Length: 253
Image (tube, rainbow, N blue to C red; front, side):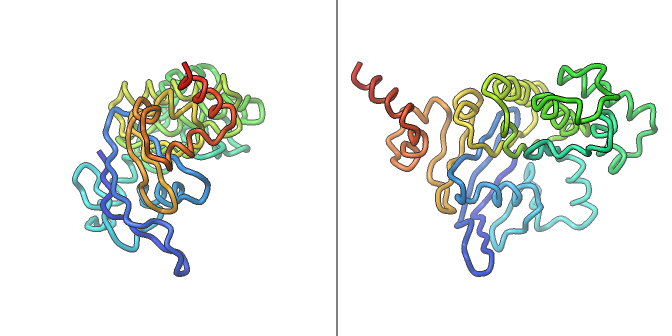
């Protein structure tokens, strides 16, 4: 579990996070949503330790980040997996080398052990036999699956995904959502996903934190989001004319 308590952050005197508190449970797909500029990316970076809050605290299974020394923070980094927006693969490396990269940086495994681990991760994301391909040879969906394989290669307790569906067609987005959800449940990972994708919200939003203007404006599940009378989340969810028309049609029935 990750807990954020009263997180505040400003840049050059401009408040971006304004006292956000939230908890994220293991074995669930936890989503952070909101309009551009709402503070989602800064909040996600704060949760990963990439950005230090001005005040407030982040707890990783009860361990306060601000109280950790350099050694403890290094151990925490070994427990974190990342799936970056766009995949962030190294073009000059093969698929196998991309997935192996965290092991080479942070583990003391020998080459055989690392290769076995890469085989496992690629099999888990349905990319067996792709080790020697280069990113330029892959489709957008395959690149995202390689990024997920790299994210889980260290057997993380915490998995952070920044816009994992960006640039993908709707059908491939569903495949990526299902894969992240399966891995989360299978390994009991605390998964936190930053997304704009309403399909993801409805399909895998077991816990949803909605940010607006730097505040937590709403919290609930994908089922709750259709029934809420919170005007901020209603305006966000039904910002599309098509969705508004569908909602109005449902109400008339």
